[in-house]
Each structure stands twice: as structure tokens, then as C-alpha cells.
Image 1 (cartoon, rainbow, N blue to C red):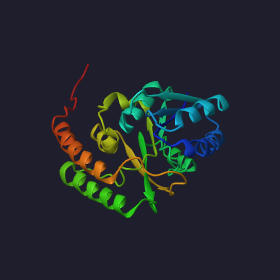
Image 2: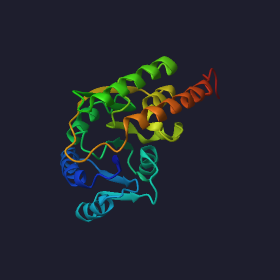
Image 3: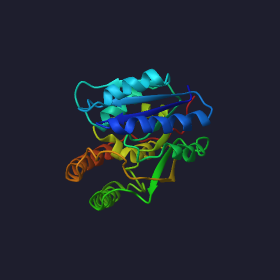
Image 4: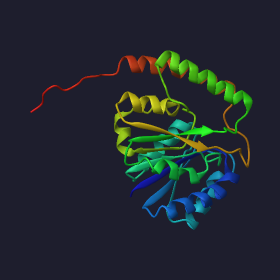
Length: 235
């Protein structure tokens, strides 16, 4: 298996069928061995039923569903755990990451360990953009994080990277930093971003900011305690 596409899902019943249709077309055009792993984070709408129906229609779909809501990081971790691909692709289930943009990341697959999107013409609310800018500034100030866009869910990376990373709650907000801290090569690629066709964001701006501040200091603690060494001689 070359690629595993991991998609966390929370109350996105209307978005799933259009997203799957687009994604299927893109992956088929790539002429590769792949699977698509949807992780339902205990949705309260009909998302799980839609996913079950899609799994019957598309043989390459796999579905994981939680009995309780655990958050995006847990959904990603569960998807990573069951994935069989050498490379993992992540994107959101709301359709704001056009699946066609995956091809832009694939171009750098042979040169970098981790390729991540940078949203251009970002189609989010003004408040959400401001919150992201503030968070970006504080990550740079406290952690020296030079990532351009840590909020973009469109990523491509070698699965072996996960063996070196701690997967904690909200780790996805610091994914780029954690990968870079372990010495893996990273490429940031400009990708398109589009507005939602259905529903609204499931995460409030205030909640994201408060949890982000709390997580920030946890990562500061973690980064200071990373074990670092260089081997001079080994036989």
C-alpha cells in the first residue's frame, strides 16, 4: 500500500459524499495503491450512516468510529494506527481542502519527508484568521516555530515519522514543529482553500484559543526536555 488518506469526521454528513467523489477521482488519476480511512469522532448527525454507505459503494474505504467524542487529534491518531500505507495524506472532511491539491504535495514526495500545505486566499471568518495570526505569533515567540500555516490539514508524510513523535491531545496544532524538531525535512507548498459548502465549523474560536495557549506551554516543556545527541563513532 503506497498511500493512506486519513480523514477525521465530526458532523459532516452533507459534505462526505461530494468529498469522497472528488477524492476518488484524484486518487485514481494517480494510478497508485491507496486506501481512504475515515474516522468518525462520535458524530451526532448521520455521518456514520453516510460513511457506512460509502464503504459499501467504494471498496477502498475503511471506517473507524468512536463511542465518545475525543477530538481531532484522537481521530487522527486512530487513523494513523490502522493505516497500511507507506505514506499518509491528511485532509479535513468539510471539503475546504480541495482533494485536487494533493497532487501539488506529491510532486515533492521524493525530496522531503513531510510536505504540508499553506492556504492561500484562505476562506475563513475574519475572527478565525485573527486568532490564527495571534497563535502563530506566540508559537514563534515561545517555540521559535517558523511554520507558515500550522492550521492547514492537507499534509503528506512518511508513516515512519510517527514512530518518533509523541501523539498527545491537540498535537496536530504543533505537527510541523514536532516533525522539524526530530530532524525530518519539511516542504511547505501553497494550496488552494475554499469556503464551506455545508454546515459550520465545529470548533469555536474562543475554545481554540484557550486550549491553544494551554497546549503551547506544554510543548515548551516538551521541547526543552528533548534528548539530543550526535554520534561521533559507532562500531
